[in-house]
Length: 447
Image 1 (cartoon, rainbow, N blue to C red):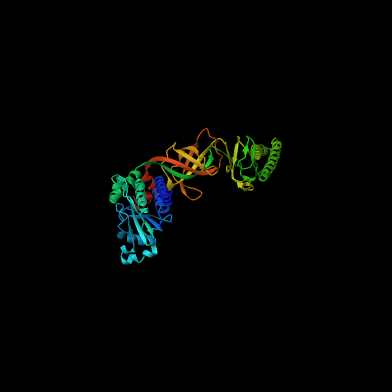
Image 2 (image 1 turned 90 degrees about the vertical axis):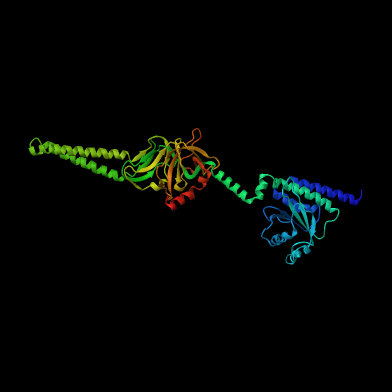
């Protein structure tokens, strides 16, 4: 077999490979890359540029050797000015162009950007598609052996481009031909999309709190000596929780005991003198009352002494911050020291900022994304919504929302924090996206 026949068979094989690559391209960008770069395997050239007739003047979709052509670069700016003289027509015939075909001001830059000959290879579109033009910068015009291969390759590339450009007689082709109508269709599509109903949602910081906790209060006025349990410790019914300093109360008890002894002595003395002294008999009732008063006060103080150690009214988890913060702190009668909660009875508490507030009804679904396990949301349902906004510890006005966690799942630990996603009623997508700007505009207009 002759060397010339082998070369021809090799070119035919490369042509078939290029056609297959063009057919398998999944995007217009991938096809453009194949056209300007892989055509080098079939015919030699210094540079390749793909022009597509998008819009009025068209655009240069790809340049060989670069992933993304710089539309504002000096090369494409010069080529864009020269395109009017090159007569880029996908339905035209292949032809070589030189600097002599351009005006003097453009021909001066030919040697800087292109080789001696620029082959204009139209890529005719199929099924009414516009097609494109492939520009190949070469040192010479194509040979007689290369022209049939280029014609065949141009038809294959044009057919592949038609799959991405659409039919010229279809609605996409008509929209390309009429940009004004395309804008109207786009505006109508946006209007329909804005009217599409979506579920209103709001994100809010949330915390797992105890449901119906028991308050552990100071039974008397005094000073906390020490806390007998650790934070979040599980305690049993009757277990000591807090010990108050007994020094002050014990001194009062000692004074009350001595006052009771004095009252008893005065009462006995008056009782002995009552038989002979009418005046002593008259003061006997007052002394008896004073004696009973001192006895009652002593009994009351002894009862308070027994309450200096606060015990748990029922089993649960002791909720407070730090035991060291309470040591030595004075407390008033009834002041809260800690909470005693049932670990199985928890609920969700969220604070929805006023700008993000949506209409929430009882039973509205809530998803809780805990910081400890953000990939496993916990389901809940709204049970209570605050009727007015309150200032949070961070100084943000927000509505307080409580939600009951789903039954059946293991309740999370009290004190865990995260983000709650609350779902409100449905509203148009445009209203949902523009609710903040509309609210600002309403305030600015005073409506």
